[in-house]
Image (cartoon, rainbow, N blue to C red; front, top):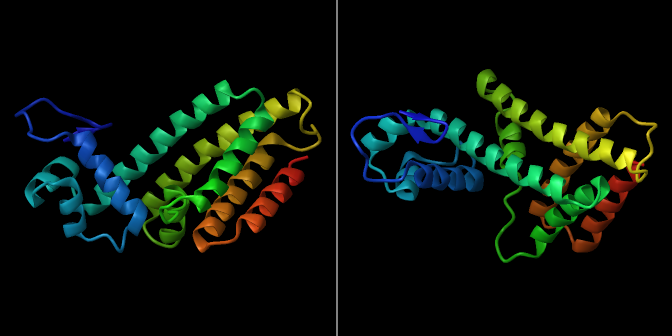
Length: 201
């Protein structure tokens, strides 16, 4: 059985669990939960049906593990980005502009795996929906840290609550990612970024 990306002791397996989980995450992220078939997952992970079920459980359990992997990886990256950014506002600007640049890539933008999943699971399984919402809250906390830092550095006004602004910023970023997926022009995307930043003042 897998726990936090590691296997319990027992008979050695002939595959890397982390590689298989990352492959499953990519499929779910690209196609969504409903559109992902068992065969899609078997093809991506190169596992047999029995091995996939034995290690990850059923499809929903594998999806939950994929959400965890995505959020953990992205959270660590953003933590590092905040720590190394010259200012809180720079981190926020870099985050927004990085999303906009996805529109210029050669691959079709997939949006945020978490935001995509919130939309797909909004009226379905309550436990999984709560898991996704909880992971979203962690990212809002990161944005609150960046906003508070920007306020202390004098780049943003202190008149607004950092936590409330973080919620606004997180939702704005979700909308921005959706706009990138929809194929909006770079000019319109840049305008959205400008308005979002001005709303934080």
